[in-house]
Image 1 (cartoon, one colour):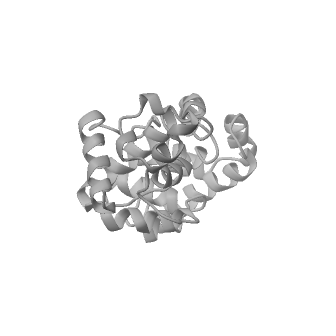
Image 2: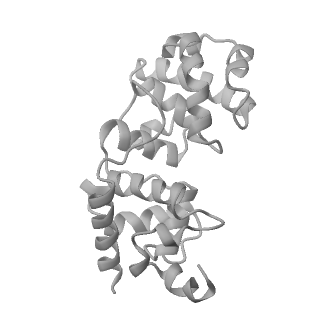
Length: 216
């Protein structure tokens, strides 16, 4: 099987079994999504979704967050990972969003990267989810699953994984592939013990073919 064929089969599987895949973070507008995505770094979506309802009650707009005191923000997000850094980034993000973008979320990755707390992965998430841009956000799930299946080869970091993936995935299908890979890694292709018996792509997965004899 060629790499192109492997990509086509994986995408076809996602189209058939999870065509409506989307982020599991709860949000109603761009402001809420960027807050949730910043909070989600090294933290589960489940935990973020527990934090954000009360957070948005206290800070319902970009302007209210920009004017917040650090101790107020910290108190609301202290149950997530790295609350000190995230407090600084959230307030900084809101201030820059107001000062440089009039409070309107930019759609280009290059502009999103100007916001505190927004790295390439976060920028790609926002561009893909909010604006349906052909941006491939690579988190630990995407990086792991892509390598296991054989969609990527020798990628040492998320950027290399991203470049290999977008080379073979049609632009219109990148958002679907992104969410499909995340959810597959979250619920099936787990880091420590992948559930190969529940996986629908074992027939083309290099990891399965290599490990099956060992009891995967």
